[in-house]
Structure formats: C-alpha cells, structure tokens
Image: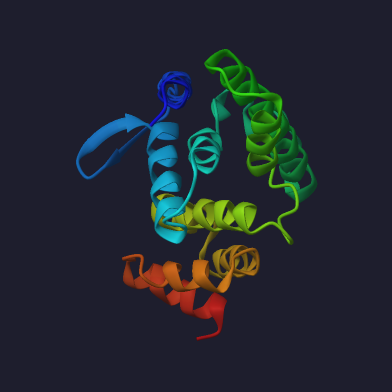
Length: 194
C-alpha cells in the first residue's frame, strides 16, 4: 500500500468514526459508518479480487459522514428519499475529493472515486456495478431485519425486489450466501421469485 492510500483511508475512517449511531456486530460496538465501510470493502474485494486502491477508497467513503444530513430533513416518500440520497452522494464525493487531494491524489483519480461514489454510469461501468453490488450486499447483511420490522414483510419484498434489479448476476449469487433469519430468507425468496 502506498503512503497516500494509507493517509486517505485513515482520514476517511477518522471522519466516519465520529458517527453517533453505533452498531453491535459480532459482539463489538462500533460507529455505524465504519461497520458499513468494512462490509462494503469486503464485498468489493470478494466480487473483484483485483480491485485497485481507487475502488477501495470509494468503498470506504461510500457513506462518508452520512449522518450529518439526516433523512428527516427531506420530505416523506420516495421523491424526498431520492432527493436526499442524490444530495448525499454529491456531498460525499466532494468530501472524499478533499481528503484525496490532501493525501496526494491527482484530479483524474479524484474524479474516478467520485464517479464510483455517485454511481455514475452504473449500467455501463463494471467497477461501479461491483460497488453497487457491494452496497446492496452490505444492506442485506446489516439492515435487512431491522428494516423488515419497520416496513413489514410485504413492503420489504418490494424493497428487496428493487434491490435485486440493481444487482449483477454475481451480486445476486453472493446475496444467496448471506446467512439470514428464516423470515429474511423467505422475503428474499419471494422477492427473487425462487
């Protein structure tokens, strides 16, 4: 690993360590966005063993300081959610760009990380698709049951169906390897039609 890569990862992780929301995973309580960054990085490396440092930087920064702009600041419903998510991605790309610039990355590298974080060219860029798959897999691992409790099974089937349509065949195959509760597995089966 290069010095600049280590510096950028340390700065991204330090920013995410300030997350006031905590998750307990494997008996250890940690800031939520650090847990998410770990999972997304792990999935990127699993799906693409040749992932380069640009891909790993994007994985670690995908939800950079997400808590600073609460979802509740936007209107209820899908339109409000999509606006919040779009503005979050732009902010995150800008903030990670500042970190990368300070760490010694050039303009082209910064733009590339930003394009992965904002999911530009998702339909045509395999690196962005791998990133999207990793995000979806981290969601299924970390938020599935909690969201199902909140939304109910029928609505959750619809959410998972929409999630699966964003994923590649390799991502969907990986989703089937995630240990799930009986309820979660039933929702996944219903959403995938299997």
